[in-house]
Length: 252
Image 1 (cartoon, rainbow, N blue to C red):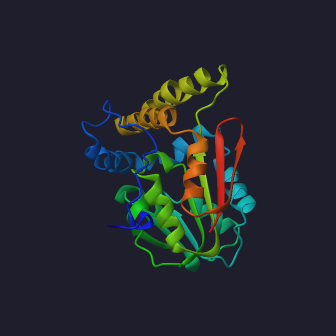
Image 2: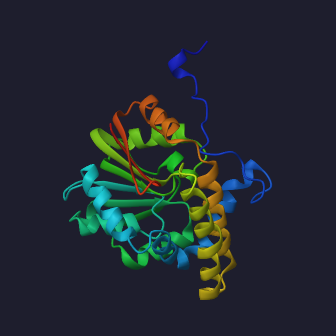
């Protein structure tokens, strides 16, 4: 009989299955990969639109607040087009010390065009990285797109050296009854319509619809905080900006 510590942890999905987008839970990852592959050319534009043009500054300041400095070895999980990496390089992190991981080949292709760093295909629950290889792990707005938060945070802990830091940026469903419908309209209706007029890319429209669905269904912040703590992280903290932007910081 296995000891309790040897038993596999109960999986913790960030949200319920969304059958309006994929037929079965096992089809979720292939749907997400294809969606991001096809919307990769528009992703930076979408990010800018959702933040009213402040996404670049916000990422850089969030990394700085969390303690990222030059000389650190950085892993960017779900790296996408490299917006978090770009912000880290602006803070003086050496490109030779930066690794990005993403399951979408389309997003990685865009990332390679602009960032002279190591980029690997893979997902957060099975990182293709050595143990204790990094001083800092970050993830920008991708927590909702993984399958299991327990496995994800276990991998974060595995690849971090003792004392290393984690920063997770996420969009949290607003609790303000006035803000909620406004943000829902902006993300579900206005941005997709502008995006369609801009490039006629159906995948970008679907991306925004999926984004909102995952934000609306995502587990609350206290569940994320508890999962980080249960995974062995210390000094777990969450701060929030503008009612919707969550910064989760924790220490290995």
